[in-house]
Amino acid sequence: MSSHAFLPPSSAKRWIACTLSAHLEAQFEDRAGIEAKRGTLAHLLAETMLKEKYGLISTTESAAILKECKLSPLYDDAMQVYMEDYVAYVVETFETIQAATPDAAIFIEVKLDMTEYVPEGFGTGDVTIIGDGRMRNIDLKYGKGVLVSAERNEQMMLYALGAIRKYGILYDIDVVEMTIYQPRRDNISDWELPTTELRKWAEEVVKPRAKLAFEGKGEFVPGEHCHFCRGKAVCRANAEKNLEIAQYDFRDGHLLSDQEVADILSRADQFQKWLTAVEEFALESAVQKGKRWPGYKLVEGRSNRVYSDREKAADALKAGGFSDTQIYEPQTLLSITAMEKAIGKKAFSVLLSDLIDKPPGKPALVPVSDKRPELNSIESAQNDFS
Image 1 (tube, one colour):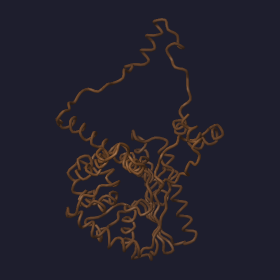
Image 2 (cartoon, helix red, strand yellow):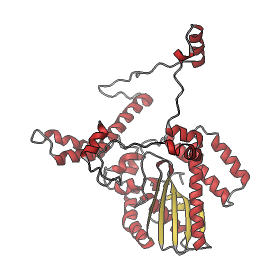
Image 3 (cartoon, rainbow, N blue to C red):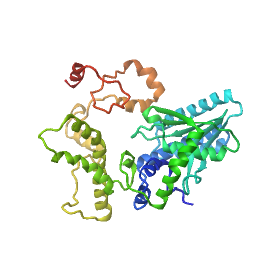
Image 4 (tube, helix red, strand yellow):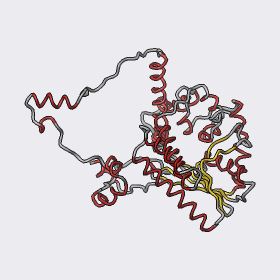
């Protein structure tokens, strides 16, 4: 069996909605970006600390793994703090459940079998806690680009099915609780549902859709789930969906209606992401594979001048009679984000909490589903732009 499932839980939202996407993606190399690798490192840090905490590995083993992690160029102090906070959250959650149910059990980074519903389906659960008829699954998300919700999260629901299959023989599980822990977005999202409802979803939705996806049947269905699809740049269905925005060029009348403007706004973000994906695909194909696109050529882009050796440049300027005040910029404080990373969250809070202001953000037009309160004052919004 491959180390990666053909229908992985992480992309379940996509292959459930668009059953042909899995076979489309198989045509493209999976090039894990820097953020994916950063996430893998963060997971290893957290897993190691948790396993040492609960005696699943020795202190010596833990020290060796953590030392190796810290040698990675992707490691930084902020990651360490984030993962220590995550471990503290897991430990506190387990201890709270254990206080009410002394025989509660915790399982860390366990491989889960989902083949009852998904052909060759498997995945790894970050943390599973079981006690008093309830199962709590906690999933660490280190990415910060997309805010992840636990509500009806297909990946989490598949993990829950795998965990029920693995532990349901030993424990009565009536309710499943799912938690997304996303520290770089200050996001902890919870959702729960009865086990009976979860199984119903698995039988009526997952099982038939997974069968179609595995066999390469069904149809292409573009939508928000296309965001991480490796084939999104050249998928015709995705292109046709995004190009629907061009329909407004051919309508009667000189001005768009309010509803048409709102409709375009609702599509704009996805449209821009699609254009970016096409541009990145075309450039990568030209650079890596020598692809020549009709009407385009590969050229050297603009670049900025840089000092090849800053110290030697400074010495040469001083030798030429220029003073420090002429050749150096004044010393400035680090940005707030950089400062928090440099000195740590605790020191930052103690020393600077009273010296940090957060002015109102600029007005932004967002869907009504956004959780932020609506601005009611036109004058207030106009003042923010002034």
